[in-house]
Length: 327
Image (cartoon, rainbow, N blue to C red; front, side, top):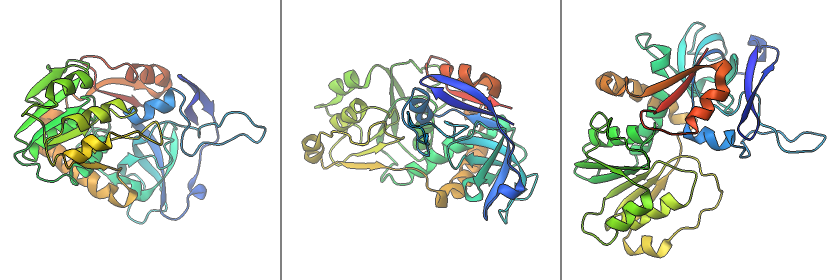
């Protein structure tokens, strides 16, 4: 079977390996025929060369190597063998590649990490449920969303979902900040004010003023500066949600500024125990808000063009949101 893996910084290579079979499954696992993969912003640092979780250090020495099929964790697939009691062969599922190794023709995952979605959704649409589930799970921890002024820093494929979910949860006003002008899709995703700017310039104009947001979502990740900008802007008693996987294990933090506004900082990820529930809610949400689908998946590539797909995702542009891979 085919697999595609980061072979070096910015380089993806194909490898042919034996296909796993039902005999390779442990209790609670399923074997998928991968149909669609979604490229997430948290995959991109690994594409650029960052050390991956589940990497392997060669016995002969040298740099740690990623697992075959890495880095990709958003997957849609068909169950072709199952040791998961509630997922039968033939089920169409969406969710997480358990070991972040989704660029494989056939993939073993833990059954709790995937959800059988409605057959009314095309696989290329169903892939949207995974990032939407992450956003819905994250928004659950925020308090006092109804009536709040919310700011979302970074309005890519995750940021637009945060904007829409928070607006639907009752936010009175959603401000979005991005280096790329997203005004063409602002209304669709519930954005009331699109600020085409870097976050530090936006923060400089907000800090000290009366119009400070009560909630700031940092949806860029991968850097310290945007989190610092968020702390400079929140209102008294405000909340920050830091979303995504940090590139650096330790972040310097402007604690004095944060303390003075009695701020609250949240972060996290969607654990296996919450994934099916979040995916089910995402499917219900998509059914209630079908208008957000068409503008979301902007670029599709065959898995054989994974190099081009990652290069595209690594270069954000106006009119570009989600980049997907299809078998």
